[in-house]
Every structure is written in C-alpha cells, then in structure tokens.
Image (cartoon, rainbow over all chains, first blue to last red):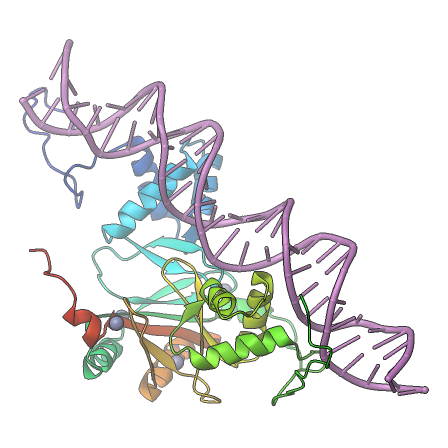
Length: 154
Length: 154
DNA sequence: AAGATAATGACAATCATTCTCGATAATGGT
DNA sequence: ACCATTATCGAGAATGATTGTCATTATCTT
Ligand SMILES: [Zn+2]
Ligand SMILES: [Zn+2]
Ligand SMILES: [Zn+2]
Ligand SMILES: [Zn+2]
C-alpha cells in the first residue's frame, strides 16, 4: 500500500485507539510480540523477549503499554498466585471469557460459561449488590505436563 | 517493661496443631483478632489493629502467622486487584466456598455454588487437565455503599 | 514545516512481602 | 521445677514487582 502524497487521507484511527493516544514504535513492538506469544506472560518476561529480539524498549514503557492495552480490553490480565500480573492477547473481540491454565507450562485455553455468568450476577443481585463483576480462573496440569509429572507424594 | 511475675498462661492448645509447632502469645493474638473481624483484611491492617489494641506483635510475625493459618486451611485468602493478600476467618470447617465482596467497604458474604464446582471440574477434565482447581470471587457494591455512591458520570 | 504535547527511558521511589540472625520462650523429658 | 532443645520472635535489611519523576524525543494536528 503506497502512501498517497496528499496529506488528508491517513486519518483512519487504526482500530481501538483512545483519542489522544499516539502510535509509537514501542507500543507496536509490544502489540506484535503479544501476537507471537500464546501463553500468559509477565511484563518483565515480555520485556526480556523484546530485548533478546533486538528491540530496545524500556521496562516502564512495557508496563505502560500493557496497562493501556488491558484497559482498552485488547488483552487479558490475570493475577498469578505470587501477585504478579500476567498478560495475554485474547481472541480478538471475544469479550468476557475465562481461562483454563496449566500450572506448569502455562498452556492457556479460553473458556466460556454462560451459566456461570448468570449465576454470579444472580448471587450479587440477590444479596443487594450492584455493579457486580467477578473473577474466575481454572488451573490444572495439562496432558503433557501430567504425563511427565513424577510419583505423587503419599 | 514490667511483666507480672506470675507466669504467662497462654496454654490454650486449641484444636489441630501440626506437630513441631508451638502455641505462642502472638499467634493467639492473631487468631483471636480474626474472630472479631468480619471482612477481608491485609496483613498490615491486622498488624495495625493489634498495635492499636496494645498487643505488641512484629509485622513479620503477623505475616508468618497468617500464612501458617492459611496453609492449615483455618482462614481464607484472596488476592486483591493490587496484588495484596487479604485474609479472613471463614465459617469454621466449611471447606471450599467462594465470596461476594463489596469493593468499597469489604463486606463479605460466603457463597456456595455446587453447579459451578461441577462445571469448572468438567471444563478441566474435558480438556485433558488433571488436578483441576479454580479461583472464583464476586465483587460489587453492597446496598449501603451503593446508596452513598455519587452520581455516575454520563 | 512548526508547535503542542503524548510518550519514552533511565533511574529513583514505593510498598508489600520475605529474609537474616541474635534473642526469647514454648515443650518435653528429667 | 529445671534444663536442654529448638520453634518462634522481632527489628531491620533485602527483595522484587510496579510506579513515579522529569528531561528528552517523537507523533500528530494545523
Ligand atoms: Zn502444561
Ligand atoms: Zn465470567
Ligand atoms: Zn459496601
Ligand atoms: Zn469453588
């Protein structure tokens, strides 16, 4: 796609970009990296990947980019048991959903549960709560990791 | 610090104590405090409460006590969105359950959802996962906090 | 092209939680 | 009771993820 010299037709604000935000090399790098990673990763892991890839992006910038993308709903965030935030690009525009995550390798599967959605909302409302939300994550050992798991302690 | 010459009597050896563990004034203080608090609180909040109550217990000790109690299943832990761990004594021996928590005041209601339990397990198994577990928390504004909530922006 | 200002990056600052290690005190046996 | 053993304590240092600062770029509008 050749760029027309006339300056008045490049105005397409790509896809969801909040007004006032700018497209930078760094944010593009983070966004692209997320396309090639399939599991939940921490900000620092992603920062390392960028570095090893030759990309030079500051750690704080990676944090800011991830937070912006998460706020915009472009990526998912889960809180690991150690308190770290883990990020992952989710099926585009899929909206609200949950995850089944392997405790060992991080393999992630997106899951939907309409019944659970209804139930959690009902629980809140029945107790007089408004603006009800929830968190739900399923963990386990995937087939691969379970196979190599050694003898369980008695 | 004048201590009463008569020996201290902290001898309540409550119910279940793992072998090799000792009953101390500090742990008793934390345990008792949790009985009087009804919402999820952070380790530091509990530490402050102890201090204001005249009890003198080190912060690290509070952390250790809470972790021990959580590991023993005597109290519940949830991860706040800021990464902090929040602790609460749950209905004794109730076993696995979930929580409906007010985002503002922390009011907590324990909830059970047998159907959700079955569903999460099935999702894991259907995808070849074993040793399946899950986290589920419901958040919202309780009636009281919703009433004092200001006008929502348009 | 020029100006306004969002965004960056190197580094300091937070802040919850964990670690260190000498001091203290709970336990079990005598 | 007394003592030896050793879990536990406490004060402060250390850790580690995340956030703030601010001078310097780079993007976008005009
Ligand atoms: Zn796995
Ligand atoms: Zn949901
Ligand atoms: Zn409330
Ligand atoms: Zn459950």
